[in-house]
Amino acid sequence: MPEPLTLVLLHPFPLDAGFWSAVRPALADDRPVIACEFPGLGAAPMEDAPSVDGFADAVAATIAAECPGGRAVVCGLSLGGYAALALAARHPERAAALVLADTRAEDDTPEARQGRHDSAARVRGEGASGFLDEFVPRLVAPGDHASLHAARAIADAQRPEAIARALEA
Image 1 (cartoon, rainbow, N blue to C red):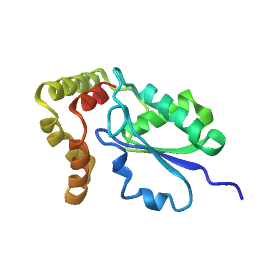
Image 2 (image 1 turned 90 degrees about the vertical axis):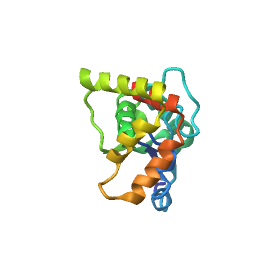
Image 3 (image 1 turned 120 degrees about the horizontal axis):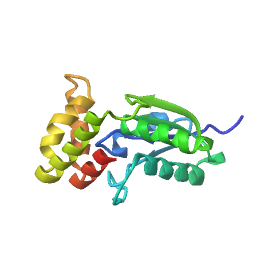
């Protein structure tokens, strides 16, 4: 019987690989699991100009180095989904399958792009707290206070500059 493919998890914005901590043990029951982090978020080093394509390239390098056969099943949520789609386009030989959740394939509208740049400027000027007050509740189901608290704790651990750069990416 062939060895199961590694599962690579790509987290949503503005969180890090800790987002997957509650489900990762169950997912690892029958296969290796790797949780990657967007540049500057979590333990990932900050980059001057991070991008979704750059994140996809880094994930491809991780898969090539750490996954048997150089292929993996890639699961991306939100920002992670953008990166998973970029990985499939840029490095199709690395993605055996994609699992995409709460993401989209089309580019931002000019208004959405401007909103991201405005939010990045706000985070740089005011700090992340006010932005996170508005943004993080949209990540969880209404009334799910435990998930809201967990997501906010992860978001609060991020450096404001990393949040701003991820918004710009």
